[in-house]
Length: 177
Image (cartoon, rainbow, N blue to C red; front, side):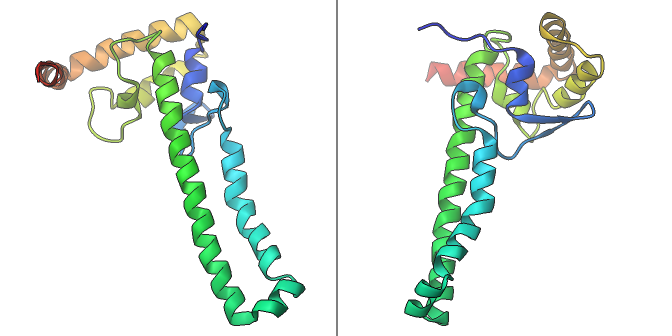
């Protein structure tokens, strides 16, 4: 099976949204690039499902069968179940996007964990968004973007050398178990 080599910018656009050369992390990742569910369909379901359920339960025929109290309770219970299904779909979609993006990311940066650049916690790559925004501002694409990000990763690793060394030791220790 031939593996598609996705562009770095496409990989990053699945998890970040860009607006005027500034980026922010998406809540629902876009899996369309990797052959999965596009985020717009999950968002559409999140918006339309309560309206569809309202129309189904509070139409004159069903409403007369249930009565007001039962219709309200039934709507609330179904709404909770429907929202749990949508949230679960978004969770598994995001998880699949990260796994697929990690595989494509390793074609460019095999030593950099893709999850580290998405992390909100303290990582050696905490300034990734700042470096990526600068690259976007310079309108870099493909090889130039890859080169700029490689330089940025090297710089971030040098700035956080203690953390990088601790992570390597921890990884080596865990492999030894």
